[in-house]
Image (cartoon, helix red, strand yellow):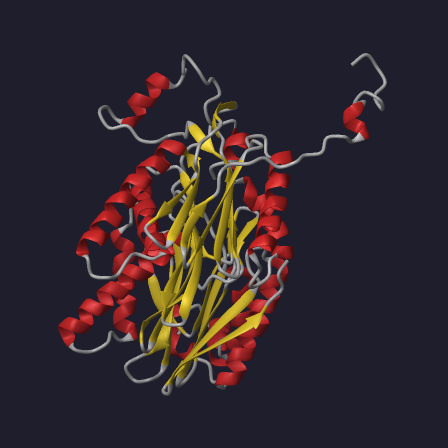
Length: 263
Length: 229
């Protein structure tokens, strides 16, 4: 919904900076004082995540686009939530910031109960599903696809959890998830190569393989990534880094080689 | 322009077959969006009461909200009446809940099934806005059009089809007649066959089949693999 239909339907900010032709009608369509989300503006692209031996690993790039302009290049789209979870978001970045505010309130009141219990990833996922669904019911969605991962001690020991929820409230739990273009490019790789109890190094290698494919093929991704992991010890969001890319293909070196004509 | 669409169809098919003293409910576990598969292992079946099970296909956000709302209402009923809700009672509640959102519907296609107050199998089939009827068997969802003809062929009683041929009097349609005389294991085999067939031709049906059998001794769950393409 957030990545794909935009590029095909020609939606999203077609005229980025400056005049917005549909500006006037937007206010009118919103019905006077209340405005509703019609399109996303500053968007993040795919987030991918998978369960491994010690917990959950999540990765995404640090770019945020304004239509076809790469507006922000150092944006953190993965954040820690409480002691047991991390959340990653694609889609409208300001809506993600709003969601982080909601989660702040939630974790604060959870902490103030001071009852020795803290919200785990399953609870956070359930809460966010309700928030997204209720906003969709009011026709004013939070234009995001969220990935929630974490580890918490349960009745069967340390239980790893990884789930996803999209802007209309569709949600599910899986061993590996990806949003936006990741759904089409990364999930096939994850389905073929993921297995139970991968080591951290194996998981990072697999994640980097997916990120590289997304870098080559997703127009809105950039070569600056962040990986985050969550284990029983807590969450770690690693500093951003770049992947090595290869452009030395003969067709790139001499693109007009096979073409007859002046262009 | 990409306009916000509050609905999406996450696909899948649900089936239920009522027997003399049992009920078989089944649904595939594939969650799709567009041409992608989001999950191969997502259950569409919710146990609302000990003898009452709801299988829903359609938009998953609405399915989960509906199942949650019904479970909450069932709990309140238990607290007020000191007993679990019977299947026919839940059937009426589901219809009312769906119609309440008549002008912004739950995009869900439901089959409610279980044992009635006499212990006989019952199946209730719904559309998205709450119109329902009690039948002996039903299929709802993306593969329903592929399954219903096969179920009609195997389960509609000879008495029923004969009456229909001879007269146009639809009052002869005795809904309870459609409760199958098949044994429990035969009904389960039929359900498996019918899903295998629908999986061949419906892109949204497949991966795994979850079968729930309700009888006097309780609820029994079984899963079998379906084609993953």
